[in-house]
Length: 156
Image (cartoon, rainbow, N blue to C red; front, top):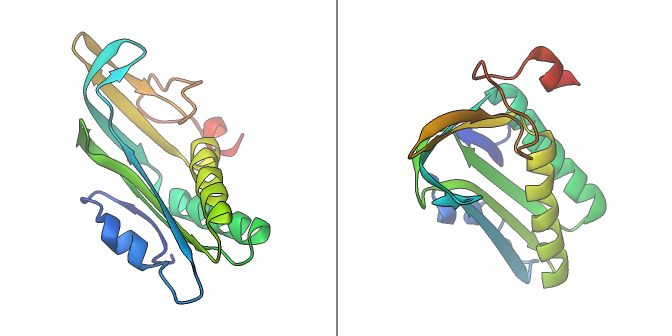
């Protein structure tokens, strides 16, 4: 799998992701950094555990890169998403997009995070002060009581 689209269980270096897309012909590099927040819908989160089908998740990240290049041909994209136990303020995802002009860079970056939530098979277990629960897809419209998606969740 391309080095531009990775799932890792290690700390994500923002600089390393950004350096993958920096190039002389670009006048803009937009970086989105997704972090673990403390409160969600009024509940205090202690930490999260992300899991994924890594080979499929990396293919889907690469698909997002292809989609972006179809919409913004001059864009270069790198995405790294972390799995494992993450605590408040830890970096969960870094998206870096370079383009000749800033508007395309902003738009492509927003497109990338929305598509990640739609199509990349990454799920998480939220650990709150008063309990825990597996959250299914990243749109948070589905739960995974067994701790992983069912086959129809992956291919549906």
